[in-house]
Length: 112
Image: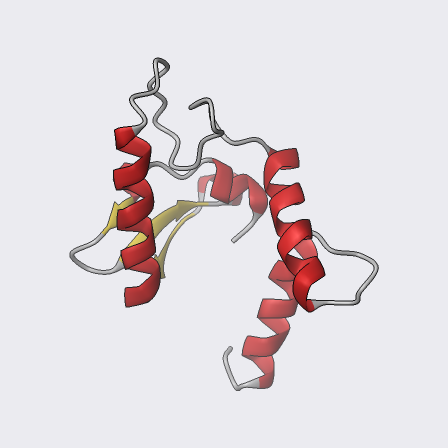
Protein backbone atom coordinates (compact mmCIF):
# COMPACT_ATOMS: atom_id res chain seq x y z
CA UNK A 1 0.00 0.00 0.00
CA UNK A 2 1.30 3.45 -0.87
CA UNK A 3 1.60 6.11 1.82
CA UNK A 4 -1.02 8.26 0.09
CA UNK A 5 -3.41 5.29 0.06
CA UNK A 6 -2.83 4.63 3.75
CA UNK A 7 -3.56 8.24 4.62
CA UNK A 8 -6.88 8.23 2.76
CA UNK A 9 -8.21 5.08 4.47
CA UNK A 10 -11.44 5.46 6.41
CA UNK A 11 -12.95 3.19 9.04
CA UNK A 12 -15.72 2.45 6.54
CA UNK A 13 -13.11 0.98 4.15
CA UNK A 14 -12.56 -1.93 6.53
CA UNK A 15 -14.77 -4.96 6.03
CA UNK A 16 -14.37 -7.02 9.19
CA UNK A 17 -16.90 -9.59 7.97
CA UNK A 18 -14.84 -10.48 4.89
CA UNK A 19 -11.46 -9.56 6.44
CA UNK A 20 -10.38 -7.03 3.86
CA UNK A 21 -9.79 -3.33 3.26
CA UNK A 22 -10.95 -1.36 0.24
CA UNK A 23 -8.05 0.76 -0.99
CA UNK A 24 -8.43 3.61 -3.42
CA UNK A 25 -5.22 3.87 -5.43
CA UNK A 26 -3.77 5.90 -8.23
CA UNK A 27 -6.27 7.21 -10.77
CA UNK A 28 -9.09 6.17 -8.41
CA UNK A 29 -8.38 2.50 -9.01
CA UNK A 30 -10.04 0.47 -6.28
CA UNK A 31 -8.65 -2.79 -4.99
CA UNK A 32 -9.53 -5.12 -2.15
CA UNK A 33 -6.66 -6.04 0.17
CA UNK A 34 -7.07 -9.07 2.45
CA UNK A 35 -6.10 -8.63 6.10
CA UNK A 36 -4.97 -11.24 8.58
CA UNK A 37 -6.82 -12.06 11.77
CA UNK A 38 -4.08 -10.49 13.96
CA UNK A 39 -4.23 -7.26 11.91
CA UNK A 40 -8.01 -7.30 12.08
CA UNK A 41 -7.81 -7.59 15.88
CA UNK A 42 -5.31 -4.74 16.06
CA UNK A 43 -7.51 -2.53 13.88
CA UNK A 44 -10.54 -3.25 16.07
CA UNK A 45 -8.54 -2.32 19.18
CA UNK A 46 -7.17 0.83 17.52
CA UNK A 47 -10.64 1.99 16.44
CA UNK A 48 -12.02 1.31 19.90
CA UNK A 49 -9.23 3.31 21.55
CA UNK A 50 -9.63 6.09 19.00
CA UNK A 51 -13.36 6.26 19.79
CA UNK A 52 -12.66 6.50 23.52
CA UNK A 53 -10.53 9.61 22.94
CA UNK A 54 -13.63 11.68 22.12
CA UNK A 55 -11.76 14.08 19.86
CA UNK A 56 -13.49 17.41 19.19
CA UNK A 57 -12.72 17.26 15.49
CA UNK A 58 -14.41 14.18 14.07
CA UNK A 59 -12.48 13.08 11.01
CA UNK A 60 -13.33 10.24 8.68
CA UNK A 61 -9.68 9.25 8.43
CA UNK A 62 -8.70 5.91 9.94
CA UNK A 63 -5.33 7.08 11.19
CA UNK A 64 -5.14 10.22 13.29
CA UNK A 65 -2.67 12.21 15.35
CA UNK A 66 -2.78 12.32 19.15
CA UNK A 67 -4.99 15.42 18.77
CA UNK A 68 -7.48 13.67 16.48
CA UNK A 69 -6.47 15.33 13.21
CA UNK A 70 -5.84 13.27 10.10
CA UNK A 71 -2.42 11.63 10.06
CA UNK A 72 0.00 13.28 7.64
CA UNK A 73 2.89 11.92 5.54
CA UNK A 74 5.74 13.10 7.78
CA UNK A 75 4.14 11.49 10.85
CA UNK A 76 3.91 8.11 9.12
CA UNK A 77 7.43 8.54 7.75
CA UNK A 78 8.81 9.14 11.27
CA UNK A 79 6.93 6.18 12.74
CA UNK A 80 8.15 3.82 10.01
CA UNK A 81 11.69 5.17 10.27
CA UNK A 82 11.70 4.68 14.04
CA UNK A 83 10.52 1.08 13.93
CA UNK A 84 12.73 0.13 10.99
CA UNK A 85 15.74 1.43 12.92
CA UNK A 86 15.10 -1.36 15.47
CA UNK A 87 15.46 -4.08 12.84
CA UNK A 88 17.50 -2.64 9.96
CA UNK A 89 20.93 -1.15 9.45
CA UNK A 90 19.99 0.29 6.05
CA UNK A 91 20.70 4.01 5.69
CA UNK A 92 17.40 4.72 3.96
CA UNK A 93 14.38 3.85 6.06
CA UNK A 94 11.03 5.02 4.73
CA UNK A 95 7.51 3.82 3.97
CA UNK A 96 8.51 3.49 0.31
CA UNK A 97 11.53 1.31 1.13
CA UNK A 98 9.35 -0.82 3.42
CA UNK A 99 6.78 -1.23 0.64
CA UNK A 100 9.42 -2.32 -1.87
CA UNK A 101 11.07 -4.69 0.61
CA UNK A 102 7.73 -6.36 1.25
CA UNK A 103 6.98 -6.62 -2.48
CA UNK A 104 10.40 -8.16 -3.10
CA UNK A 105 9.82 -10.66 -0.32
CA UNK A 106 6.48 -11.66 -1.85
CA UNK A 107 8.05 -12.08 -5.29
CA UNK A 108 10.88 -14.19 -3.83
CA UNK A 109 8.25 -16.46 -2.32
CA UNK A 110 6.44 -16.99 -5.61
CA UNK A 111 3.72 -14.31 -5.54
CA UNK A 112 2.85 -12.67 -8.83
